Image (cartoon, rainbow, N blue to C red; front, side, top):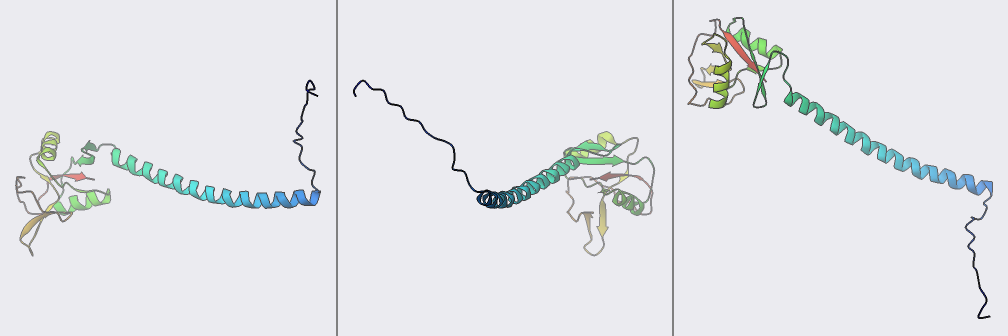
Length: 163
């Protein structure tokens, strides 16, 4: 017996099931798979929605409309015609923007560099008689370092829109 070789085989064939057992297990398996498929589909849809919104937001932040200039993540449009302050204000609102709000000296330098043969333009400052102060159209206070000149609102000037 010492010199005898021995072999062992493994039968990997599964037991044959009756057709009733097979269809019952398959239905159960499909039910579980369908449940997980629905969950994964919901997660995938949510992720795709978030990605789409992020992409649209980035595009809107990065791109300016034609004829608008981009500077420090904002878009600026310089008019060629002249209007009153109120008409200029409405013009900007109709284009989903507002009259220019200047936040710092760098922005002021950009504006001055891009003004076309015009010393005076309408910007988004207004005087509230109730508080007796100048405020920007978004409600923020004015920086005292920015040099402004007041004018009656019925005067006509070019203007700058911003978004």
